Length: 170
Length: 170
DNA sequence: TAGCATCCATACGCTGCCGTATGGTATTGT
DNA sequence: ACAATACCATACGGCAGCGTATGGATGCTA
Image 1 (cartoon, rainbow over the protein chains, first blue to last red):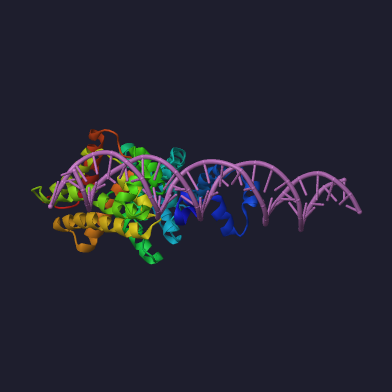
Image 2: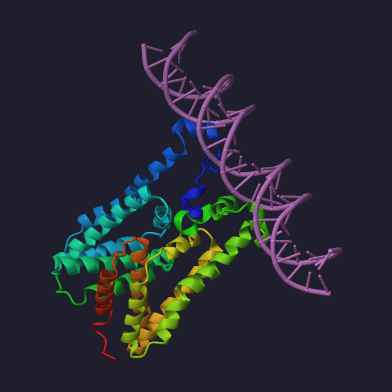
């Protein structure tokens, strides 16, 4: 419901009908609607970013290898637009906004440390990480992600090249 | 209402109350709620992107000068998050999505032609324009825009430098 | 000044959704 | 076998918002 119609459409009665149950069931599992909404951000964080960060931890090689590992990992997933729905929600709910900002920080911090590892100064690395990450956000939010894995991989390679061509080959 | 709470909160009765009138007035000006919503995308396009494109048309100099003109123009505006609200809406309404996509295309086409003018091949210019534009989108959607004009200008200069440092000075 | 169009208020019925109260069934522990 | 607990359905009252019907009020026009 969140992905398809937005947070204002995750309502308990339509939700129950979609699941083939009634409201009575819902109010046994959750105190009220707010209680359900509170559980969503953490669910999202666990599902969408923990796997990526775990994957980059476990890949060997230099920083550019790890950047490629991230890009490849994401390109091989099917883009399910969960991020978009969360951002749309965060737009209008301060609590969710801080939750999403925390995720953004975690992701950008990873990129930043990799750019530092590749030889950039902290300030330059921070900016480069922004450019890196914002491309991802922009691609998702404008729904401009290619349909096939091959196209996504090619575009990712292009991005990595442009963002690291001036760095030492580590 | 759209900017602050999202499209699902532009409802006729709260809207009327906010304007200090009653529903009776609303239903004289608009057929129904859908009629109001239909008018919003065009209103947004006129207000948010026409001025920028008009401004770049009227600035002299080479393509990089014009790129700077765009960045400077946007940096001097106060970021009012209208774009974000439209994107949040477009996320869940296909008609709005096409309207927003049309705006994205217009903006990116401008950047693309400038990169071509600066010597890039059509394919390279298209990718470079994406990177250019997605940074903008990412900055807005993550609410990471600096508060002061000076900081925004500095960041814009940094962006322009990184995206054009390998091009001929035209 | 009579008539018509413009603009807004009041009042009404209807629907969708929330949250609660209450009862029923199934499963588990002893 | 018999509680007790977990899980779900039904039924209710209440509110918010939609759209319509109707009646002023004001201004323009002949």
